[in-house]
Length: 123
View 1 (tube, rainbow, N blue to C red):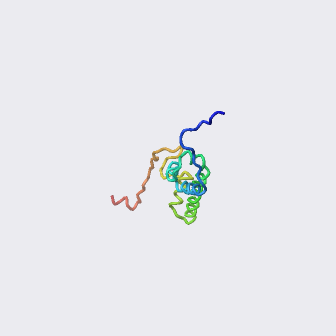
View 2: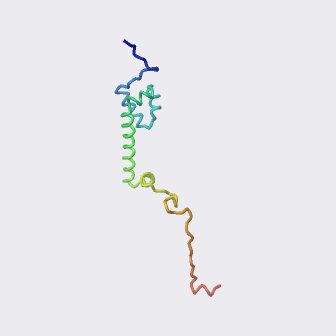
């Protein structure tokens, strides 16, 4: 019988339930997989192999919470939240002439000033 070949390096360590919950929380706080691995003292490949779902859920839970707060602020009429949403989601911009078919230069404006007749004699 042939001996089983050993893979080089440490064997991967599967996180337990408590560690998985903490990984989900850290992902929700915005930590990268590398940062989570460092905090949890696990290898990056173990995190990627065993905790894909926890990282996905943590990040999406955080996005959901932030989006709910943003819309709450929009409903309250908070202008900064309204502007932020319009810039990010509706592609609004504060810069003039960014859209397609617009030029960067403003067109020339001609203003005709008519002097009232009562002021013409004072010259």
